Length: 89
Image (cartoon, rainbow, N blue to C red):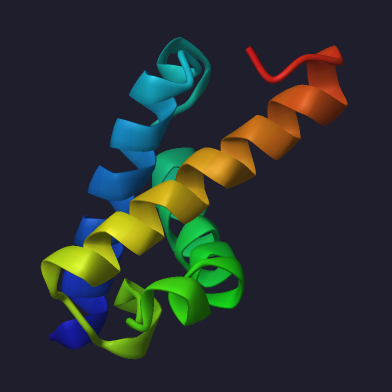
């Protein structure tokens, strides 16, 4: 059951990050889920030690962990845009 919640929350975070980075029209549901989950891992690696919290990948669904996971997804999309287009956007 936790896996399904993890997929849903990852999809929502990936979708919100794609709207912030204006890549929503290029992504589908599957890519939003992938961006949300990988972005949460990236946020956990980069940002979680700074904020002293976990991410959705560590079964922590607090407001701070959702924020760190969201910021990780935005950073991931910024890196992809930088590599693909030569600018963050």
